[in-house]
Amino acid sequence: MFKSARYGLNDRVIGIWTWIMRFSPGKERIGVAVPHLMQQRSRRTRELESACHARHAPANIGRPPLANVSMKVKWLALFALVTVPHLFAQTSSSPSPPSPPVVGVAFWNIQWFPGRHPNASPIAEQRQIAAVQRDMRMIDADVIGIEEARDFSKATIAVASRPGFKVDVCSNFPPREDQNVAQQVAIASRLTPMGAWVEMWKHNGALFPPRGFAFAVYQIAPGRLLLVYAVHLKSNRGEISEDRAIREESIRQLRAHVAAMNAAYGKLGTITWIIGGDFNTSPDDPRFAQETTMRRLLADGFSWCWQNVPFSQRITLPADKFFPSACFDHIFFRNANLISARVIPSSKRSSDHRAIFGVFQLPP
Image (cartoon, rainbow, N blue to C red; front, side):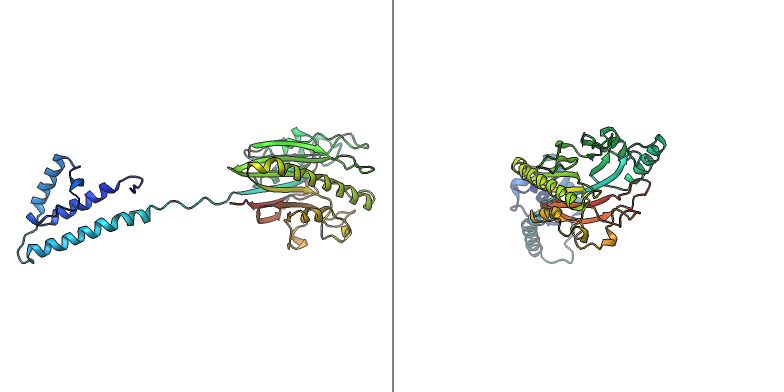
């Protein structure tokens, strides 16, 4: 039997019955429609209703015969008893299913944070810390991938202005041969990770990619997993053919890791994949026309956040005296709908790179 949140059907029918009884004449009162329901009412209640009827019973002067009135009232009662449950059922229909989850993910190369140089002065460090924390307030994301923080503690400082944020994972890669500090990758969020770790790229013959990737798994909703990679691929400060080969090797290893994680986490629910960071290349830049780094991800079913976005609207590395403007920071995603993607207008005091931000709707 249908029951709303507050009243049962019996209560509603009894209410209708009482109203009809008040205006039904004398002996012709309806007494057959719901007698078993009227028995549920207390003796005191019936006495009060009889007294109320006595005060308000209409006179018969100038009215049709009582039999006609009684018949009309009976038909009214029958109509009400049949239709009222259906009306309440329609107005108390089950709520619509919840909307698919939406998450915001950002990535930002914050240039040797803090200080913007490997051996920055304390004044330079404080200047960049203030600028980065100010710009972080513009990034209303759930997850932020960070490149070029010096270590875990520095990555924590970088996101300190974001309410509820903490660093979920940060690498501890060794410095390059000609450096005494290293550039790390990290993932910070306002979510609770199911798991998070980092891996260095491995040697492959003469190819030795620098750094590696940070990885985190989040359960956005029951049966809805978000797997995020933060990467910082080889720069272009060397021989172009060698740099290209090193980046391609990094992506080969990353794709192998994606396949392994799909096997590991696919049993727990639907997976959405996000790979982002500083790739130091672009699929539509003529300088890298022969490079397959990003085309391999596209071939694996990933989508590019900058697809069909004019170059002028996605410059993430403005020109300097050494290099032209470039779009080197990207987000690749799979099994999600891209709602929007944009470049955050971060200050030059924060970094030579601008932050990027994407909003994604996960599958229902």
